[in-house]
Image 1 (cartoon, rainbow, N blue to C red):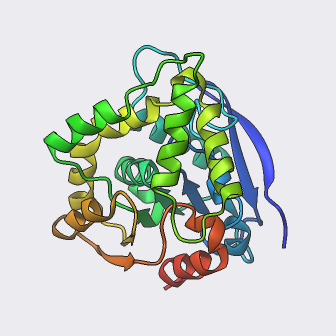
Image 2 (image 1 turned 30 degrees about the vertical axis):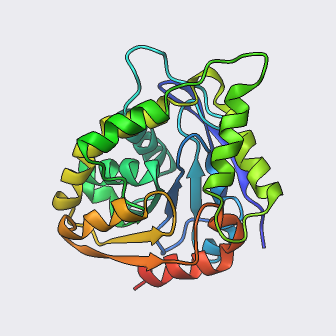
Length: 267
């Protein structure tokens, strides 16, 4: 099984990094969109299992992983991430593409499908980040940037949260990689969360408007109950629960995840 290639293209914010496996074929390309503050590393173990008969691509959003960051002002929004990923799709000339989004990536995928419906065949949202106004205020405070200090408070809190939400089978080594991805965001590591919380009403609206088939994979994680709210919004799709999967599942169960995705995308 081939390992992912690592490539850069020029974007409006500088260089955009992406991983890819496989080659273009008569099967639609699959494009995988990560949560924040992670990167395409989240999909590194799973995408080879998706790529036996097609191209699979996993980019890093601007400011995450190995992609250059956007400017501080104006604040980056989900629409900006979507625009940059659309540029990647067009540069790769993949034609109509399947989108797989994870947490924040669910919002980016929905926005891409709304903006350019002719470029998207099917969508998978791994969790549906739908928040009430009260939850949004709480999350804004919870994910406020933690200042650096000599005691390392930021990193202690990051690690405690990874341990708190650690999913079944997630090893300490996997948790350490997750921690390292957080740290790569530097002082801008929470920009993506801010963009996501600003987008919650738009995302809920997008779910009602999308014509493409949509699967919401509802993991047993911190967005489990929020994802249940999608049932009343989905216009062409369904939710499926995965009670034995949580954070780290892409590393722990890559083959099983790939089978689930392909069962939906190829049906």
